[in-house]
Image (cartoon, rainbow, N blue to C red; front, side, top):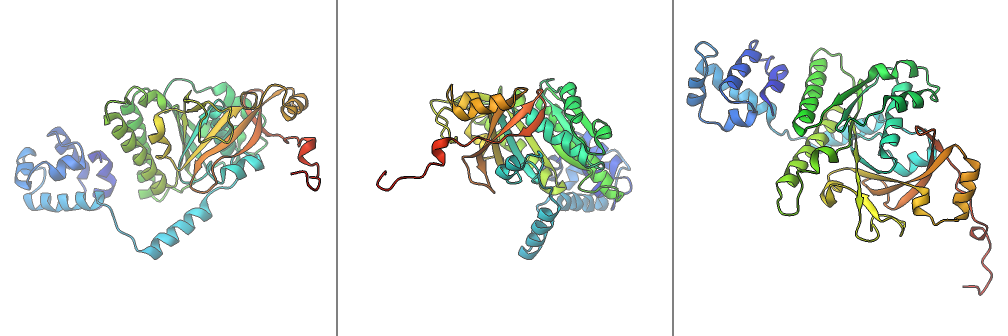
Length: 369
């Protein structure tokens, strides 16, 4: 952990905690690991300017740093109570489309990391975020744009169709951070954690204050680091995703991570449809670093030309394009479950009724099978 993030915690024991940590950073100790394992206290003391802290004070200071950064054990009943409190505080339907929210089984609002991939991923995530901000006037969200693809026009268009009372101020509470490098994304996350910690110190923070964090698209910062000949990139990716999970659990955040689409060697085995020949990017490792993986695809890329149900939907929804959302992996839902939805005017998510074919309801004659 970076030393500057420990200032709010150590300030309870040292009024000049910020100046002490700054002195260590100036001496080349920038993380808690550097400080705790960089050498004996005598060596650390010799690196500090005269008068920064006494030797006995330094020993106590190191004890507090170790306490603040160590993993804390919890009894089982405490863990159970925390889980119950978390579940009771989580939001329900996040898209407004009942079938889609039931299929996702809370993935769009759970305190954790959800991967959303496919041809409609960014538009679906944008709809979820702006709809939430329009519904809850005390919530805010952070959108980390890694490729300058964020569209404010789509956000405005989506908000125009949302009837909630706080829609007029939704964009005021949506913060956009353009971060093209991994280090810049880490800086944005550090600033987020520092802001939440500072608000908590003044009793001004509530879990609903910052609700969503979006990283779109995540492949833009990791695709160049991954290779089939080295594990270093995969280790960097794993470390980053564990950081997201820790932030989500600690501060009750929902991370929605938009991933790219790459070709699959034949049918994608995670999909319920034989015609799915694409898959999320960043390799199979990434899928298991997220609590949920939701896949989106245009319906006309899944169902064959002339499909009766798809033809009916097109005729009934001339201003919409029909998509299919599918659960590839989830801790709370069966995989290979799916439901259709529509996007109107490129931004607005709507429900569609999938027409039943005539032979779906035809009775089976005795001896017919």
